[in-house]
Length: 68
Image (cartoon, rainbow, N blue to C red; front, side, top):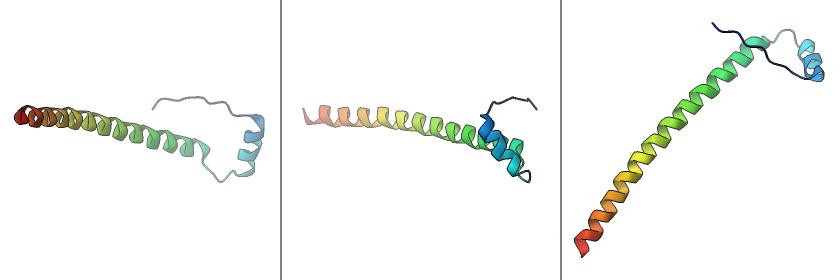
């Protein structure tokens, strides 16, 4: 597993120390993991919409040509 270091303001660090029962590293790891999964899903949806847009444009053009 890769390690990263993050910086937080001193005020935030003091708040974190008030809640030692929270696994802050695990929380940040889970947040990063969730966001990465959301971005993958978003990318897949955008690619799917792009393919559908191309198909819809083709279908509209086909109908227009048929009307001529």
